[in-house]
Length: 471
Figure 1 (cartoon, rainbow, N blue to C red):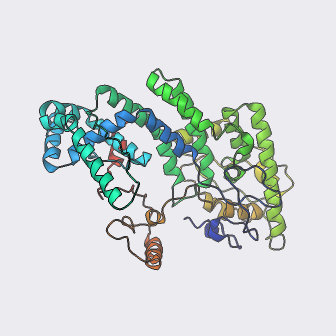
Figure 2 (spheres, helix red, strand yellow):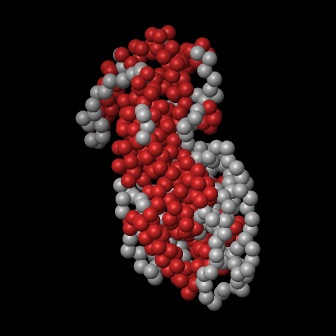
Figure 3 (cartoon, rainbow, N blue to C red):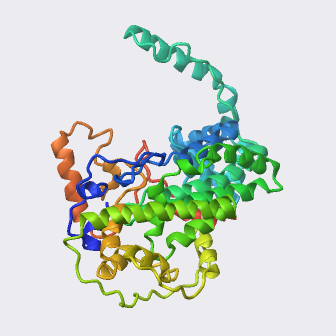
């Protein structure tokens, strides 16, 4: 995790980046209601909104996904079948650097990877159906094979006294995918891109994530709303159903986690005005104004707590120091959350009167930093820790909170997983030593690679460059 405490330059320790000084037992749940003023929020739960909504989308086109998965499984089941498939790819002149890959059925992002690549090879799969008789017979005669496997598993479980697999249904291996299935898959890919893009931001390990949670959730909701207006009935219907699932977490304003909004306020580019701007988009001006007023009150309460705890160690404050300049950049391609922030930047005034008396009021009143892709929020707070000493300590603790929890063996790995099917008997001390050493030796950011049971890399990056997923 990013060492926010060291970057900001705070003097007090924040254990694991989630505790404020001298308040170790205080926690904030997914619902922020009922948080005492004397006990500021210090811990955020892992967000379920994106994950649940994405899984709901998969259920909408379950048959299409199964058919495509079966087609991919056939191609990857033997070298001769792969060779026949590659011949069809060559004849159809399909230029794609990514290979078809099987998903892990229990992980929606893995299914998304599979669909992103597979839909590029639609013509090759269609040609394979015409030229390879084994491909058609694979689906037509697979019912007995699946039934036999189910019977074997059931008998094995009975031998060992297990109830797992008992009553297992004999399912036919459906497929091959039709034109309608490929169309549904493309709709799903377009839809899941919103959620996949958000999860990449949430699971970042080399940068602060808490200040981006609110941005991404608003962007996802707006993306779903836009898709409800689509002329494609399949896409719009899916969007309406997923919106209901997603809105389940947004209906009650009072239940929203205040710490996630305070993290946005602690971003000098947005502050309180951006939260109010987004709430106007989600609800209306009246609700947004009341929410902003309540959030400002919570922010000032948290500031008062930190002021009381750090009153004796306050350095001399340079109230007149100038703000560090970050040059804005023009972006040719922006994701939904970035577009939302840029729109807000254009709507804000170029100057704000800083008439606040306290440090917190002065911070909220000062003009925000311009939007910039290379803006370093930790460096900004390190530079401005003398101008805003108390708020810098708040930022040190709040920005250290990770938005998403991921497996440590994936987070800290520099060359694949620490634990895998071939190396799963290491002692806890050995695993801890490997993870820590790899983290210390890592000198440059490296994205977390998706786990794949057959240990073959899922080459999705190239596919992103060839498909307009965000249209």
